[in-house]
Length: 127
Image 1 (cartoon, helix red, strand yellow):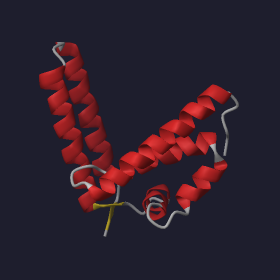
Image 2: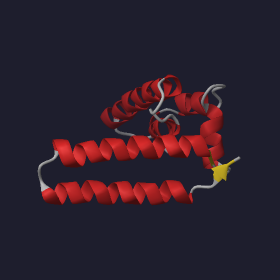
Image 3: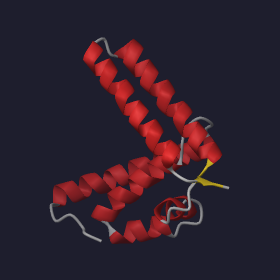
């Protein structure tokens, strides 16, 4: 592990990690809100900011298995992939065609969604 030396950046990463843990908790309760992507982001934030919180997350009874499966390339469950893609595309389409009036930015959002969709499709599906 490489902990960031800059105190401000480390604190920002810690706060972000806990924010994404909160979103993951919401995803565990609320349908259509994904859990795994938020856990992966939280793990990345903790990896660079706090070995204690990173180890806590990796060994957590509720969330640790999701992250370990992804990290060990065991795959992601099909229902997680589907919910992630539904959430991704619904938020991108609303953003691109309702909230963003600039054509090049709309195209960029769609391109990002396509790239993320390809990435998710290429991840092994855990049975």
